[in-house]
Image (cartoon, rainbow, N blue to C red):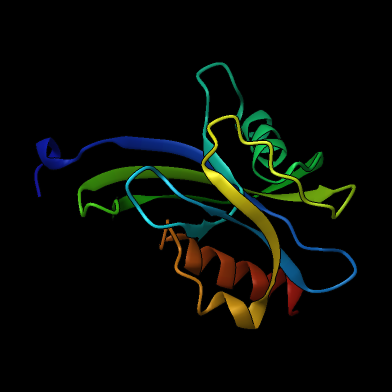
Length: 149
């Protein structure tokens, strides 16, 4: 597929946040206009004046209402994917480990696209429809390497 067929280049961040008292990962149910709600890691596009670390902290606050301490970069992923209308796009995503000082969730999304944030147990993950399906391999690897070691 030629470069002219891509609709966008997405450059964003995502948070890998696991509850400290039980093995659950933070996920967000969101819905873009014209599509059914789907799950994703907390995160989103970087603003031009932000570092990836600043962006992931902001996104955790907006998506889940959590103040977080940003840890190490877990993975940098690049590739191509399709949006819900099956249009191809290029993506780049920085996944950071983050620690939250609280587990109480209260989304504060200024775009009003987040329905809820929830702590999800690993067995539930396989049944979740993900907005960014390419996140699934990252979540599974992170779970295996970090949570289930």
